[in-house]
Amino acid sequence: MKNTRRKFNSGFKAKVVVEALKERRTVSELAEQYQLHPNQIKKWKKEFLENASKAFEGEDSGQKEYEKEKDQLLKIIGEQKVDIDFLKKALS
Image (cartoon, rainbow, N blue to C red; front, side, top):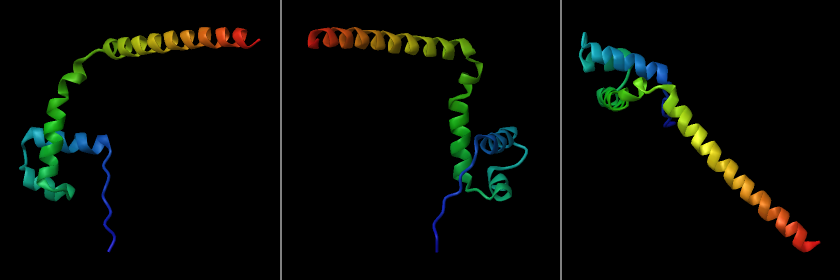
């Protein structure tokens, strides 16, 4: 018998968690409906709530991190280019 794990996309997880947060049905009922273990729903719900604040972070914070990392990488590339040019001249 093959032991295969089911993989769920983020949309499905969000749908289940939102249903759990509405509390119209118990976790056990939702688990039965979606053919999941109740602990899985609880785990997704906990993870969702822990990361909920990220939904209100502007794209600016992510963009700022991206720009900072980009600047660091460009600096490293520049330094390496200077080193390469120096070594080329030394070998000539």
